[in-house]
Length: 465
Image (cartoon, rainbow, N blue to C red; front, top):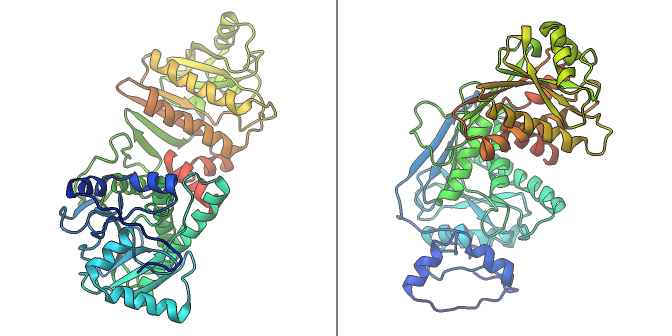
């Protein structure tokens, strides 16, 4: 049913072109950005949104039961045939199911769905963004449909627009959970709300949905709740892979009984440790301890440009452990250094092969962030060139240099991730972030989410939601 304020133009196409368009994942975005309209196939499929029933068998990609018993899973399947108590529809405010998933569910479920939707609008008016309502499922195999109104974004959204939309998407997911629990159902299937015709960025969509489910499990979920399983169900590989990757990042490895699937996580396989993650051939570890006692091939130190190792707590500790020959060698190699330099010496009594001495400015320097990024990447590249298997970093800059702890965490981990994904060609490298235990603020920031990728996602989401 078309809204009276909208115009529909029908263009006849042959079956081969229709098949091509139905499989074009990004074409609807192009049509919308160029012409400001949505493209929908007459047979009920929106371009790049839904393929229709019976095109493939249900496939589970990830499953994990969280601490309080709520099960989260990722599926590749057609929501019009998915067997679950309730499916979630990506609805518009007027509940007019004429495009994308909404149209596919309405066509498969029969006219009752649209009739009930029209009655809800007649009684209550438009559904606010972030809210959800329930209708019958008609001929669908589920018991009911939860129609959630997610935010709409422009193709080139500003940060302000995206932050506002992110909060509304979280609200929509919470509304789905509330409706599911109110209706007393046991399982619900949620698609990537707003990521199709509504142009919300897919990766951020996945992060917000999974993060919201995680927060619900931690703070609001009760074992007395009727809802015990939430499925993230989408029909296209791109979206399914993004959901799987995000679940593994935020929730950790899948339960052992989950069928093996590596398509989405070839370069992001989480280890069993809550404080480590493997990215390709690089494994990042977060641990508490004293940097001078760390058993690694390379220990990273921070020094002032005059290379006086008796300045700064980290440098003093390393000098005490290594002995005076360390000071003599670094002065022999380079009497004076500049910000951004990384100077290599032997480890002496440290037990490591090398010490990399990094020269970092204080936070007040206008290029301090860029210099910290540079010395972390340079240290990693030197480790690869030196053919070592492990390197240990302190939280550079969080002492006398006055760097904000969250900025240090973001920069250092970001550089390690970039190095692992784009630079490193070796067979194996362990990267340790060694945090001094009494510095609880740094420990909390660096370990905020258990392992490094969680830091980026959760700190960003906590800031905007």
